[in-house]
Image (cartoon, rainbow, N blue to C red; front, side, top):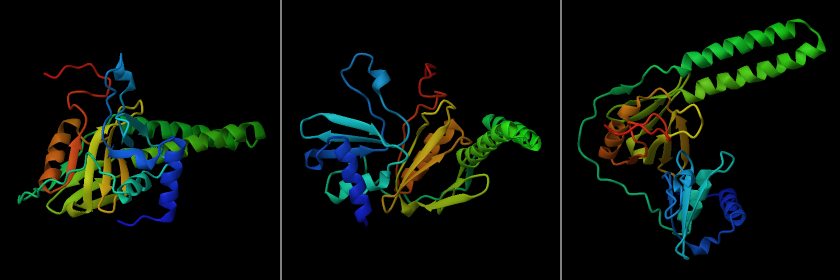
Length: 256
């Protein structure tokens, strides 16, 4: 594992802002939900979704944080490991000598045509406003064009599905894919996203402790445990944090 001076400075700055002395850290967990114990109505203080780091301090208390997308999560993890601080929830399972049949985990998402329809509507509005050539229509036209570009970006990034075979797991997007060999993966976690669109996420920590986040909105929720077991059989520390019977984190649907 290589850690750059920039990563060290990023981690030190993070802990300084959080008023945490790295020497007081006993261990840490990452890519794991946090439950607030012994608190009234603690459900609202629990943490779920991506980029959760929990710090165990010598004073016998824990501090859990959502790492902002603007913070390099890989730098935080690498720094803690470089200080010989134990990674509490990382355990590498034994590889099971099994053959993995090629499978595609994909379903139709109602959000997909919804996004496409919104992109076309906003794009049409942008073109109409810009066509008038008057300054007070051009500005809203540019704003509508910006919104449509953001929707296109979301369309390309958030509707991934997965493929597994004997060699690795592939994250498939509309325009590109990323394949990880099983021996390139250290840790994988599946959970709900925190956004209100109620989609799913896949967190990946590769062999160099680099962090990757994918929105897998086209993967069947009921198949996540199966994917998790496949990864574990190939020696990957894989976890599925969500209840497959729940459609989103706050769902009160009871397990049948």
